[in-house]
Image (cartoon, rainbow over all chains, first blue to last red; front, side, top):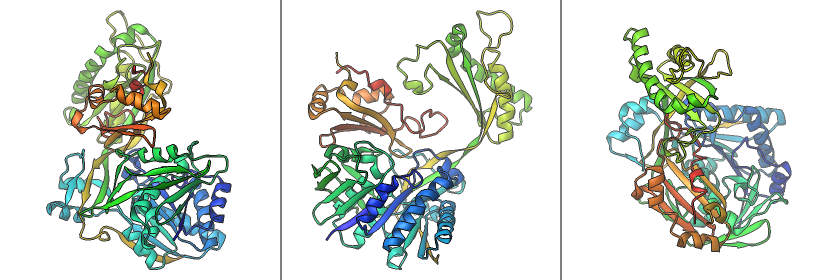
Length: 454
Length: 101
């Protein structure tokens, strides 16, 4: 048996070469799958529900994927819609999908699988002791389930169920990237170790190529090995570049957890077939004793206003490490004073980041004592409301521009601000609030599937 | 004295989810990988010291087929929390480049 898999790109909206994709279509894949999500750019997408990539960029890619899948009459599976995989992300992708279908006169059975979790369900499982921390996990309580937007990361089972009921296009909420590629091979009875390993290698598209980038990749999955090839004739794959992809965004390249088990790649063998293709064998899949669904959650951390400036005077720069802690104390007193004790300074976070000293590495900067001829200053003010953040930032900006420099007598403007006003409102900011798994009764109970004829 | 970057085609750091920071060292050759491994330079103790993390929480593996070494540990600050200045964890490797082998 051979199963042919087309991965157009690492994330829908990142783009791919049309020639590469068309070469993949010509190889007659059994299905096309593509991821649409990530937590890599932070908690904002999950907290706000806003996708990271533009509607135009997503529509451009989806247009080719829909046309290709309808031309061959093969399933198209897209997971973690709208970056976060929240319900609004799935709805957003449905809207783009139906718009393309209208424009191109396409007809198909569409399944949506939603992955957002109701607080009541999570509280019930939490009380039952069936929400378990991963390492490292923040402390949680039941209130967090109310405050956060939480998604469950589905495995293959809800996708398989949708396909078995005749879905031709599946738009899933949060799903493990690999599940999108493993669902159909598992349905067809493929070797589980090879399936999950191939899924891991191609879920990022051509990220595992010698010249990594947003482009298409193809897999021929056989009974005892799989062959992976780049569809760009100008690009290459090597055994090393493919093996190295098991490291990408994983904490351990030899043991990669999935909802239903662990992919083990310790005994994998990678062999070159050509400059563009590599043969892989030896992966094992060890089923887990307990089926678990990983949760991702983001809660509001406050509203932020920021100030950007620069300092050129070495006398001032040298004084910053001692002056800034002093400024924080001054701000706390000032908050109590002007808000007449009605605002607790502990609910306001005022923070300086000095680029050119330790802005990137913070407390881990080994060269923190050294600095160049100028530094950049980023001040962040985070408060319970946007209005408060900006009100506070106005006196933070004022005070920061008149730092008391012991060497100088008389008022000095100690920061160069490039903007007027210097305060920039950033809106709501979020924090990741959970790193736990749920032990459900079955792999389906946390996900809601609906069908529609497009 | 040769530096770690002289043995590598790439050193990078990255998030492995919001709670884990991971470092990849991609070596120029199997010989380069083995020299660095034998030099006992990339150790849990090194990362514990540089990133102020519990050595028992550090994963360290050498991967010959990938010509790579990998080090992972809990992020010192959760991704994008107020204290975090590197949402992708992408620049945390920089102090390692110049380590003497």
